[in-house]
Image 1: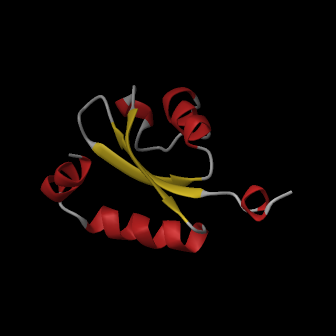
Image 2 (image 1 turned 45 degrees about the horizontal axis):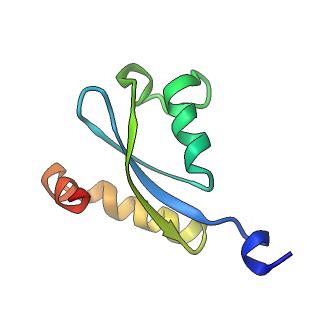
Length: 88
């Protein structure tokens, strides 16, 4: 097994909700996480449950969970205008 296979890639991601709001999170599996946000009442975030459907609009790989968490905090501090500029 190579080093990359042993260590999962972490992603910071942003979702656009049905009400046009933006949600930011981290995960190692984007497809699974988006599915959970859209379909799972226990695993989907409380914020996204009443704002379904959601769609993935941004993803950024990170080297580890700590880096992903730090980047998530940075993105959450951005204004909506700054987040929309990042998406372009």
